[in-house]
Image (tube, rainbow, N blue to C red; front, side):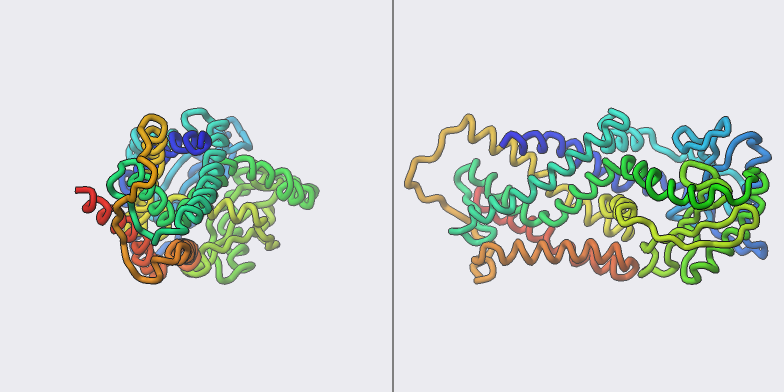
Length: 426
């Protein structure tokens, strides 16, 4: 009971802020329109861009260069100020790949959205806040699981969607259970991915300690020159080497040598598939910094794969605007759960119970045998929701769009239960 109340209060803030953050890219979308692909006879050169960047910021260490998730014509650069190898506190730069002109990202940012992000991500508590929010996500996951078993015990004598309408406490209680079943699979995914995002910094540190330590040990005695300017001049060769090593992939992220995420004297290239079906598949290529050649392919550890997948699965930002709207529907109905839960707790504590033996008037969603089976509809909704969410992430493209329409079914069930029971009370 009290664990549920603890999670409910937190989830109200997380649910509201998360619903707003779904459309952060739309609000701050000007950056993706600032650099528009143009016809150009000269291909983009990583070496050319980074050489100019280092001329503008001499003495700073190049940390990484990568294309924007939404627009390949936008290039992001990270520089370690005061020759720092660490990404925390790095200089963040954004460039138009077509013109080489710097894009003023700060001008497109919303201070309100940044405030919401800090609230949702860490409750304004910094790195410890991220872990705290992650633990809330884990508790939410287990609260949802316990709710499934509580529903099963409650539904022994009633059909799915049958709501007692005359008693406010029973009305809220029944709606709480049925809406909970409608958003059950989505809630499990949100809770699990929220937990992973909360501990992502710890997982990255573990990756650095385990995998990067091994890579660094393997290459520590190969070539001794870590000249920054030389490293950026071989970047184009590095990209060609990585693409040759993995022919059906494209460069997603380049970590520069001797930095927080790459060993001395070698680039660490993150590669992803070049088709909608393979773009979520991630591999690493280690490339010699002296020549830009000699690529070695390595697999990303399973826990890092899961961590990378957790953000899009949490925010639903992998299937276009329509999927975000569907995510908003799930989020709004999930927000009703803690609100109804608090109302139920208050009425149970301070309202008089109904006299024993009184038969409650109910409203049913359907009289079919399918709805009379207490686990049939919840199981169908759970499998359907989980399959569509994960399938949309894995296959993308048209499948993600189609999945968005299928995901309207559990939302529609929640709407029908709410509307039909409300009419009975009027």
